[in-house]
Length: 200
Image (cartoon, rainbow, N blue to C red; front, side, top):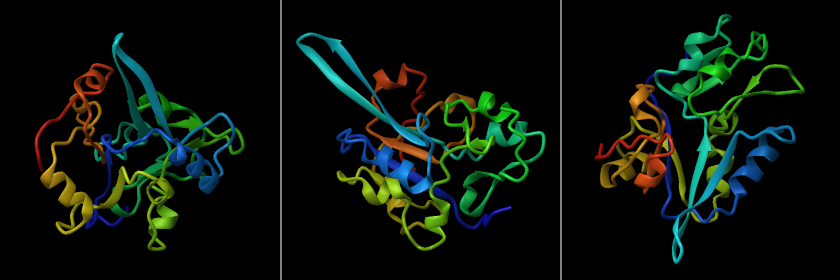
């Protein structure tokens, strides 16, 4: 069981995201993600009717849920919470049954073809434990991603959530995600993104 005195979260400010996909590229390089699979990605879509058309984008990744469905369904307890509540997979225990993939409401898991085990974003916990930011955060050219300890009132993530309206994906499921969005509009909310309005 991880350190419960910390709660690591990511805040993504969609007002700043320029859809450069640097986060996707650096994540694959940092974590050796196989071709055709992703730990983080950016969904894009056109919205509206000409001439009032807007390009919308939504960075996606594992939401490191406090009440993680993937953790609850794992028959061998390969999925568990590490330091700061980060949801990780123990490759030594994982049997590749795919129960966790089916249970994840964020489509954030896959079977790694090289290991035969479940794989996903880890918030780059190996970097965090070394005092660094997750690769996607440190590489974001528009500074739209922020990472830190939500239990620390002085952390940048705590300050952002105190001073901005924020949203989480699928709040209706009660998973208590650890990824928060600033600027998530109602059109994205209609795409299985349920808005939780208000300040922390």
